[in-house]
Length: 136
Image 1 (cartoon, rainbow, N blue to C red):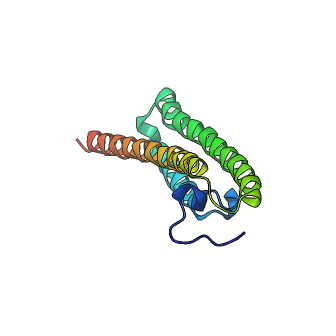
Image 2: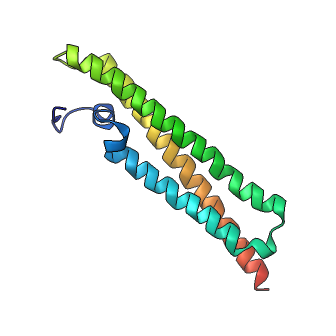
């Protein structure tokens, strides 16, 4: 695949290679693994203070984020294939395609990252609350 200039669009850089070769996809995956491992760690660490319903409620969001991660993988692959077919036939980038790719990259990766950040923040706050309650 050709190298793009510094002035290429964000969407073009995101979807210019397969998801398993994409830097952006792997950063999102690593962030997901950190949040998921944090949820498992907090559940195991505080299992004596949590009933089974609370433990399940801590793990269920990780299951939902796993489903979203697979959806991100599939959508990245689909956009890559569609983008590759369009870019092979066009020499000049179409501004409409660039706008769509930019918005799709933002919605896919920024949305996933913000959801992971929110979920991770809730886990940390919950862990602090449980830790403070057990030390009283």
